Each structure stands twice: as structure tokens, then as C-alpha cells.
Amino acid sequence: GMMREFSGINVMEEEIRQRFTLRKVVIVPGDSDESPWVKEELGRATVLRMKEYLAGNNIIAVTGGTTMSAIADQLTPGLTSDPLLFVPARGGIGEDVRNQANTICARMAERAGVSHRVLYMPDQVSEEVYASFVKEPSINEVLSLIQHANMVIHGIGDAFTMAKRRNTNEQDLEKLQEEKAVGEAFGYYFNEVGEVVHKVLTVGLQLDQLATIPNVIAVAGGASKGKAIAAYLQSAPPNTTLITDEGAMNTLLKGN
Ligand code: BG6
Image (cartoon, rainbow, N blue to C red; front, side, top):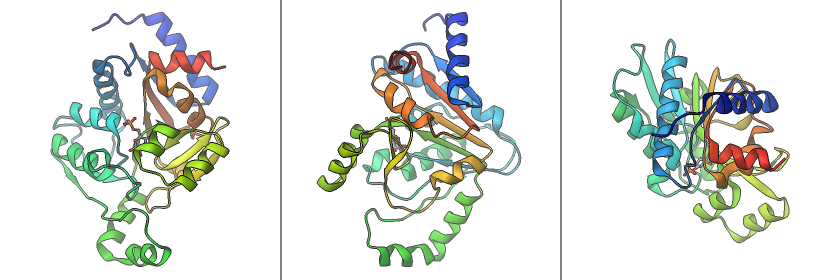
């Protein structure tokens, strides 16, 4: 690995923490856009925080994405001696199976040797179908577990990268362009000043509930995500721990 320049990185962590009023900021050396091992480091740093924050009857709600997948890779049994359950944070938001919250959630639980639940909620349904699905007992049970989560772990994406990855329709793409969307997290799209300009309709955790969850861990790195991370952090609740890398933070700091 690379040598951590303690003073420099620690100063940067504190600067970001104060600027966005966050609980904690952890910056790993390197740029995950360029070196795959940096994403592994993001995963390791996240697992360390998870161990520190887990307490009592744990329900961890997770989103999807390649960064979340890198966290799953670092999980091993014995995360906590307390009860632990993984749930997806929200219903389908148009991702490929391998990037879906359900998939990540199942892999995390398998690696940690604990249980999980999945949310079988189709993407892009009519209001009526949506309303009847929510009443379905198997779905309702998972939704209520999500409402009791004491930890949320989520990724942050570049708005247009995410919109394209989700095969977003022309109309919504235009809306994102007009509204100058920059960042994205769990289906919400943000502009430069952190306002929500678009959201994918689905069940589960809603943005305004994040502030009531004791432990929120946002994980995102890479120079290409610097602006997206800055956009999201404008509205991130103060209980957020950010796990990121130097590549992303260098872009973020240059942008202002
Ligand atoms: C999605 C999450 O699955 O992954 C988003 O719902 C996040 O919140 C995105 O922005 C990030 O993906 P990746 O692959 O860049 O980690």
C-alpha cells in the first residue's frame, strides 16, 4: 500500500467535516477511479466504522452500486455479537441486477454470516400497482424493518452516470439537464447547492428520514465523483460519516 501522509490527510478530513457539518470524515489515500485497490480500502475503512457503530438490535439498510459491492467483499463473520439483519434501503430504482440493493444486501449478509430480507418491488409501476404492492404482507414486513434501521450505508453517484446506468427515459434526462443535476444518492438527484431536483418513485427509506437514523455512512470515492459528493453533502444530515478517497476530495476542494 501507499504511505499515509498523516498530517495532510487528517487536516483535509477535519476541513471537510466542518465545512459540511458531518459526524466524521475518513479519507483513504489514492484515487479509486484509477486504482481498484483504493476501492478495497474504502471497503475496509467502512467495515471498521460499521464495527465501531453497531450496538444493540441492528438492522442495516443498504443501497446498491459497485462501491457497496466493494464493502461486501471486506465483510467477514463476527462483525458484532449482537443481532444483525441486512435489508435493502429502497425498492428497485432501475439498476442492473448486480448493482441492485437486493443483491448487495444478500451478499453482505452471506459474507457476514447473518440474515437478510429482500424487497421484491418492481421498478417503474403505475400508482395503482404501487399502492397494492405496498399492502402485500411480505413487502410490508420488509418496509417496517427498513423503518427500524439503526444504520444506513449508501453510495453517492455522479448524476448523469447514474441516470444513464438506470436507462432513465428522455423526459427525465431532460429534466435532470434543465435542473442541472450533479449528484445522486439512493434515487434522489441533487443540484450543486444540494436541492433535490428529481427522485425515483419507490418504497422504503425516504431522504427526510435519514436524519432520524443514528448511523448513516456515505461511501464514495474517485476524482470523477468530487462534484457529486459536494452536491450531496450540502443536504446530508449531521449524523453522516463520509468515507471517501483523496481523488474525490482533491476535486471537491478544487471546485470551490
Ligand atoms: C446506487 C445507489 O446503487 O449506487 C446510489 O443507489 C449510488 O445511491 C450509486 O449513487 C453509486 O454507484 P457506484 O457504482 O458508483 O458505487
